[in-house]
Length: 415
Image (cartoon, rainbow, N blue to C red; front, side):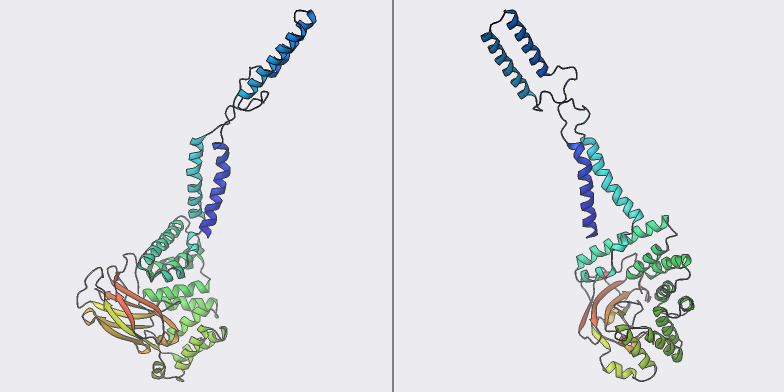
């Protein structure tokens, strides 16, 4: 809609500007020419003089006057303006197709370039727009190309305007949505440097640092979480991450304290509040993990290697199968590791395969599933890895098919 309105405004502007340049020039008369009306009056005066002097009788005088009238009418009809006494027009006010062509090429181009430099084109894209097209291979490819183009334009603008904190934050979010955690971390670092006292920004930065660190919130990510809570003790994402850090190091009491604090800040009927309540119940031992698994907190299906895969992997290459949240943190909820020789493979992901005690499959309603073949065996994806995706699917779903059929793009660095 934005581009449609912009195009209509450009068309309207060009129509107003070009109309005078393309209008036909009016006829031009010689400034020294005597108007036919004056010649007619002079000749009538001569006929009247001849009549008074007796050199012309009345019948001949009327015949001559009629002849003059016909000649005057003929002169008026031959004039393109239809007015023998029309005022003289400016000889320079005519068609100018060269200037019109120049304006037609320059003005729309200048408008687009100015918007790309001064505007915010990436704001027109939402990461959710890509999801519905993922089911269609061609649509997914086109969407990725468009998104990458917009993000690259933003990155280029920030190289010329490095003090734009909001731009760096948006670039970090865009890279995170594109699953490029290393690039996202660099962009967030610039934003934090420019706006060091924004708690929410530091919480997002910590989440990305965890992805770069293989899913662990220890180290640099923990430092950002602690700084965020020092700035705002009620920052929701920082509280949730702090609880996960506590569970990683086995401090259930501290994790419960953070979750209880967060639960009091959330709307009671929200999905997030339900997940926090489940985490609290598990940490307190009110609902055993086995009981949660028995209620359907798992997803299962089958992974196959597509015959359309861009390359044929070696039998000893590593296969990672993992579930991720549909939104929020990109840290996997559950991970299963096998080898290519095991394919096709039946799999089940549940809380027993969680990477973090505070980040489990049972805390989600829906997840996305991915299977990746890694020649290096690295938990972080590398260019040349093969990948297949499915979802979003509801937790508890079974018979999910994942076909490994595409290549990780060279610019991506995924977990």
